[in-house]
Length: 247
Image (cartoon, rainbow, N blue to C red; front, side, top):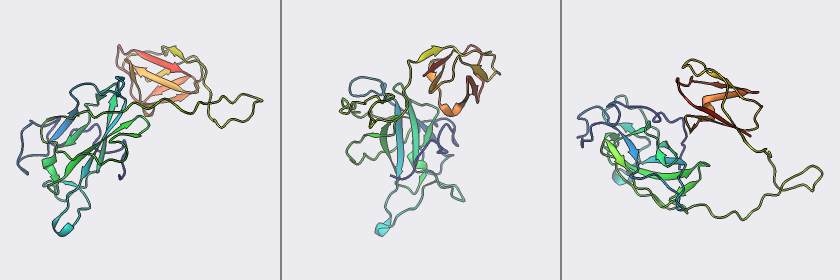
């Protein structure tokens, strides 16, 4: 399907016309490129009713030209020299909600004309949940300032059919490898929450750490762990509630 990832220059960026445009149907070239925030009418759910976490992966499908000619890249209409756009953008889905800091360009501002969007729904392991079985997704336009995408049927994973076997000292070698974690502990990290401090402490060295700010799980790329010290890239604001789950 081509390359994708969280380094796309679309992510967490406001483009040309600001955050989402005015919602009008523009004639190509009548103003600066407009962007749109994508949402769903209701929280995104697995088929069993659990809130979904993962990504909405939007791609741009290129049109076919005269006599079957193809187009090697996508650019913004009217930009000279043309600046190629990435073909994919990943919109995080956290607790059933699409991230509203990520915007995409409205279809009318994509060049060549006739570009369409496609959507894939991925779980946290980046497995494609929909469309399933290698099916081809539907083509659609994003043409207004706020686009509501229809949530598809996201089939809940089936019951495991392979039961993990513990590998204990002195036992017969198991086919299962990896770390065995103790019962997790919940802590409030020590340190001043004054809007400038970025260094906080925990009681023991973690095998795995899950770090939360105001109930939101933080991306491991936004902090570092050395021994029992957590260093954040950005200081939490005054009044923030920090929680560490230590395995």
